[in-house]
Image 1 (cartoon, helix red, strand yellow):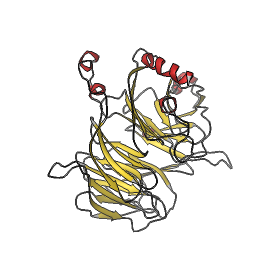
Image 2: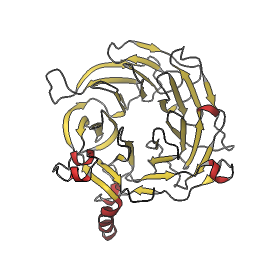
Image 3: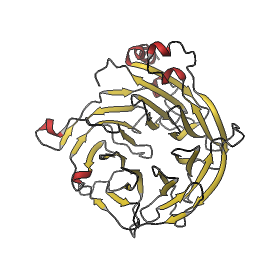
Image 4: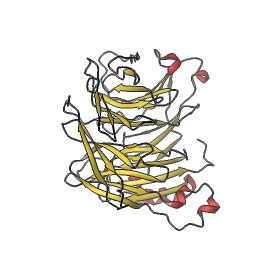
Length: 377
């Protein structure tokens, strides 16, 4: 308790802003609906809920003098509803008031929800459900296609689908390969990249063509007998991959066949890899990545540039430049209701103010934070 009190006192110097909010149930996933609001899925194993929350007004002000005039320091709910199943993945459809979710069931499907109806009610409504005709016992990953009403969803390389969120029209695609997907993303509105969870291999598709045709394949070089989980973050310039052993690799579009950088973060290997997440700032040139899911912290690593290490693509990065410890420090206990170790479920970087981070944990704690600009990042 003394250490926790010290951390709260130190947080005055560590953070420009720190807001901590506790939801009733554990958080399973979340996504921005715009720069002011976030949609969050929660569950206690029996009750499953979906809610849109508005961020604290003080957090959204760029000027501290301006923020000082605002009293509102809390998240508040815009709309919500109960869901029939626990939500495994949640993504907002851009330029709309619609979110797509996939339930944590053996049936691979997605559901579309209207965040508020024409009567501007505070109830989120289910407007349609689309089932994958090649369910493989795993929930779907979802990626919205920029500039369209479409989303791509699927759990494996051979059951990818493109569906129109308005009409529900579905185009079933996929390869003859059956690797499980851990993450998906787009470098632009036409280029989809899927990461295979067991190998870290990247498979690229051009959505303007038949998605059964592969545009690029990146083979992930791993040691013989090495078994770990891989996930990824897709940016405009390439992909950052993260393994459950704490290794980060970078692949760039102009050199798709090779890793241009490999870093070992020395994070403790994760046995429960279901929450591993990595994000990089859009247009980032200094290889700063945000990592969560290994424990209750969110880690920020500024990875050494390849040119700074004599051309070598491998480097050990022993310490993060910053870590957010608030979920454990502010918890009454280090375990949640299911007697599992408290773990960060996910984190998000703000779509406009990139120094704002939103992080969530299995105990239902939701934190919004900005590092003090005086800190050396």
